Amino acid sequence: MKRKIVAAVPHHEREVAELREDRELAVEYLRMAMASLDDPEDRAAGLLALRAVAEAYGGLATIAADAGISREALYRALSPTGNPTLKTLLAVLRAVGMRLSVEPAESEPA
Image (cartoon, rainbow, N blue to C red):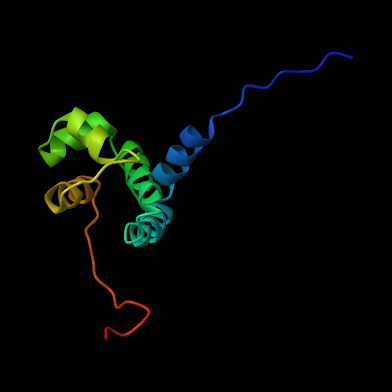
């Protein structure tokens, strides 16, 4: 019996396509990812999520140009070991049509 080979779509490409197709999903995806930036153990996931949204909404080269930074700097900032400045973070969010917001933490400050 011959098997029919079906080309698989890599997970990342499918993720980017879904984020591009559904703006509300992209917003919620980023909201959850941004919460992970507080945790050093989970920070890479948040940066990679922002990178996926940037890819979905223009591509890294276009987003870098819109944000006023080099493409290489954006790749570094949104890598698993990246450490973007607040200025870079705000510029990237603005370039994808989003902004940073603040909400109360789950626990009250001491």
